[in-house]
Length: 130
Image 1 (tube, one colour):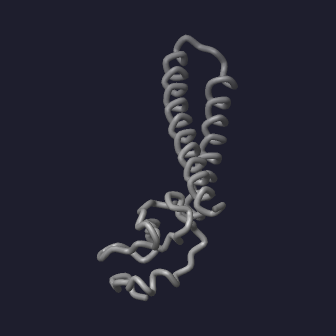
Image 2 (tube, rainbow, N blue to C red):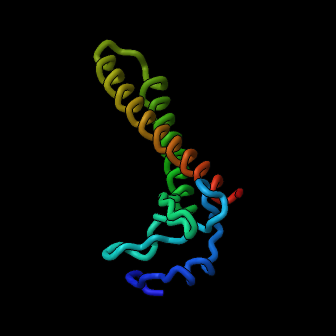
Image 3 (cartoon, rainbow, N blue to C red):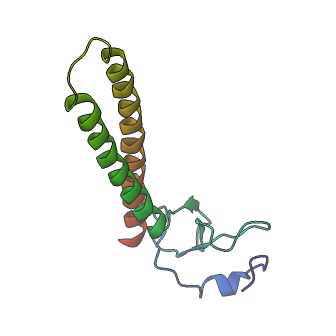
């Protein structure tokens, strides 16, 4: 089926998907591809009630989680190596404080991405477990 092809109503009932609609609980969620969008879109449409939602791909969730964990580990290493392992100097206090603020901001960002990956996983599981 091409991305721009219109699916007839009798053909929509025969389409199968691993995702079940969370709104009506009966219909399959099929990929909803609009003109100009790539075929690997994450937008899905219920064949029964026409509910539309974005279900994140498994690969994207894994990538988000792995990147966040690696980023957090790197931040903690840098924070430990540059702030705690060096000798305390009054000249380095401003530098260490600035580095601590930057590391803290990066940690907050990585934790937010990890939270979004977790929420995306829960959404994906809600469509798979029906």
